[in-house]
Length: 112
Length: 113
Image (cartoon, rainbow over all chains, first blue to last red):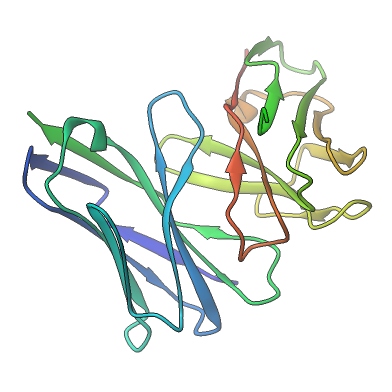
């Protein structure tokens, strides 16, 4: 099955700087790559996703890039703010697959 | 819309006790999931139901059973709780499988002593 790995496990950034989290996946058939944000005490929530026919997608301060050849995708957060502090999960799935394979999560800490 | 609701929010069990975690969604979603979250382990899939009437094992199904009661409700049962099942349990739903956004409930924090 699909194996998704995330690096680094913890990332500390100064407020206003950019944060980048990278994920790698193993199954070349994977074609859907979402990112979830989990705030303390809450369930994860989708923040952005990308499909394999697109190389980059942006939504205000967040963006996701996909490199199918290298089998990795990254989350970019610009102009970080304290409310960006959370755990971020990447995931992958393939067409017809009923489940998502999640990475282990990254703790992002934004230092005011 | 309430989205995905879970009950209870907290539970303490003694080893060997049984309990059922309840989950319901009001978004007319076909697929529902149960995950457990442990420190450093991310989200691990216990069971899922791709559609009403079907259930399948995930990564860590041992010690659990599930019931897809109807399209709205998907329950998780621990028949004989063990300390290793101490965790935070999340229910999620999606329109139709892995290529659609999953909506998560608020979680149930379970402690087994």
